[in-house]
Image (cartoon, rainbow, N blue to C red; front, top):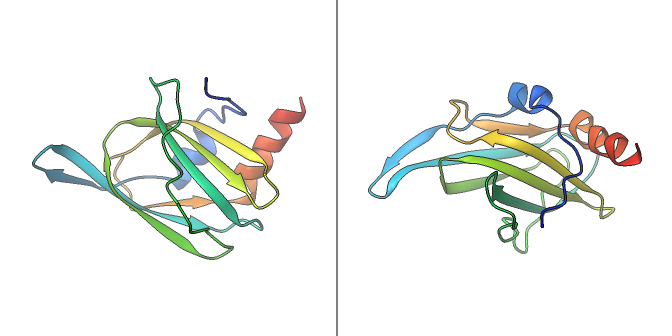
Length: 123
């Protein structure tokens, strides 16, 4: 079962995230540039359809997203996803109900998002 660390109610996330849709033979797909503007390196990045109970594979594989670096996710099926980030300290941050294909080109990971997860986990 997915661990839910925090539900930010989409406020910080929806301000910072959006995804351009592309039409492919198998349906709509999206490409998103994930930009890390936080003080922590992102070591793992997981997606799960909000309706699923299991996380998909680590989207970064052998890569990491350092501070002021970015990573591009390509050909992600349009859906509503939960996103789990794991930082360099092993802290998990779950952001729920991310609408891929929402109309923008990038998602900026900020200290506010990551610290919000830590605060929610401490409660």
